[in-house]
Amino acid sequence: MAITVLDIEKRTIGWSPGLKRSVYINESTQQEVVGELKRIREAEVVTAYDQMNDKTVFIELGELEQEQFNTVYDQYLESGGQIFYTRNKEGRKMRSVFMFDKSAGIKEGVDVPEKKLLFG
Image 1 (tube, rainbow, N blue to C red):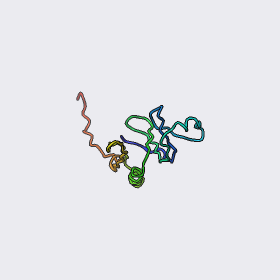
Image 2 (cartoon, rainbow, N blue to C red):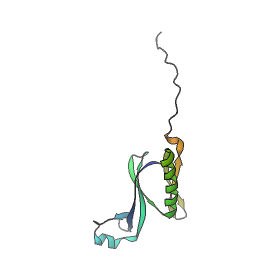
Image 3 (cartoon, helix red, strand yellow):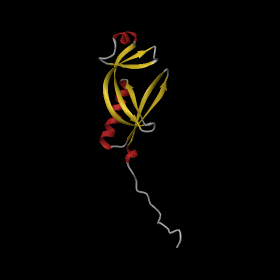
């Protein structure tokens, strides 16, 4: 999917067995809820706009994913283009993969055939 990066921040995240998904923890999170969470950790979270599906996505980055993202994002900042994001399964885990396409933002001229009259 083609993404536009909106924000990058370090967030505290925990796994909620009841919801069966990760939840973000902040100062307003109730202590009872925090006590129920598993695997509490801090990670970089990229907030991005998914251009294909017209929605905002949150991408949690591990160490290796963070290095790859930084490389791709630096290329994007230097020369424009487009960042693509996908997830690949490696063993039992899903890994975020970022790719950079420099030519995605470049518009080429198109030859338009001469306009012909319908009657004439």
